[in-house]
Image (cartoon, rainbow over all chains, first blue to last red; front, side, top):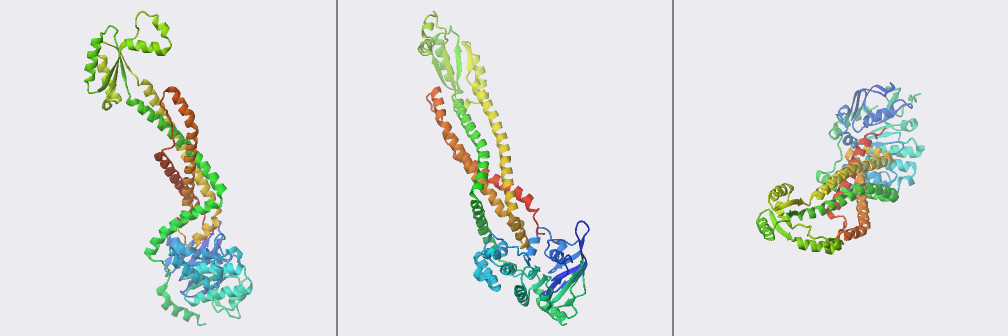
Length: 230
Length: 334
């Protein structure tokens, strides 16, 4: 699903955020991306979401080489991914329903279909009763769940999350992670960048560790020898 | 760890669904396309009505900019119509030599009336002309002191409508000058030609002012849309992140431009008509001082109004398109 082949990313000014990164995330796999601040986690996710482009090497998503994606085909590629942010990126002048409906409206679903799917997505994250509320009236954990509902509403094959639990307490964080696990159970490929080492150590999932823009040898959760980088 | 095994066995089962995407059917997308357009159409109007004061201020600025050339155009249009009416009553005055006998004049009149270029010839008797002049000019007593009638006989020639363009009139003039008994041929259209020339200049002026103000309308709308884009920057970023195409993101802004254009031109129609109502009364008075025909500008015609509305809407759309094209590129997720 995700293949990084000798990928480097250099920002203008010479700062090399990623250097020679190789990894493969299989379809229906779930992995955590960890590393200290500035290790290149966000850059790696941005390369997948086509917010940034690789300086050298190629990123291949679902068989598609992102180097060859033009400005005009880019939106259609992003529709295959659900992206979740630390700061939720919700639209605060629209209701929870309208926020979650947005990806479907962009794709051109009928109003009936939109309603059905939004309800299903909100039900999955347990917020169906909040559909008419505005996001600002919800708690942080609830807002994050709204953004997850929006990310999964058009059933993307790939879910990306950048520090999804960064602003949440441990209990809420666990709830959010369980949600991601549930989506992974039904075949969605999930890649989550996170700082929350104690949490992911409880989950038996692949861990991809970045350090100064390079990949460390991989470990999985639940291992005694796991060390927190820096 | 068995992770490697599970993931490779998963590979086989799910490789067929790589980047599968939930897609609406074509017919659904086609139908939704129009429904969404309609929704965005009214959604953008709703956005404008949320800040009625700011909207009205912008629309008024547009209205004034549009009203100016439109008003001038209405006035010029009437002026050229008026001169057009006068053109059709073109007349050529033939002043006869004083020694020409009444019988002779009668023959000439008959001869001229047979011309296909001439619709009608009227004879104004010199005696009758003197009488009328004495009655109307206020010089009655002075004229009575004259021994001889200083006025010549006059034949007024009305060219037929099919022969009234300047070229044909000119040919006719040359023809008329050849008549021996004719002292002077006078064509009463010189002032008309001057008026035409002035109207011509006026029309160019309206064109220049109109173009400049159309540019101003573009700039006002462009700037308004630029601010709207700036205000909704975060929304645009989110739209781009979840796969909104450029045209999808552009749409509400284009409709906003359209609404501004429509509101602006409606205000312009209103302004021009109010101005016409204000001008019409004194204008009617002025025209009554010239003759009994009441001349009035009336209100804006349906043609001019709809042209104004249409160009307002198009300018709005166009201005918005320029602004959106320029500023949307600058907003990308970071």
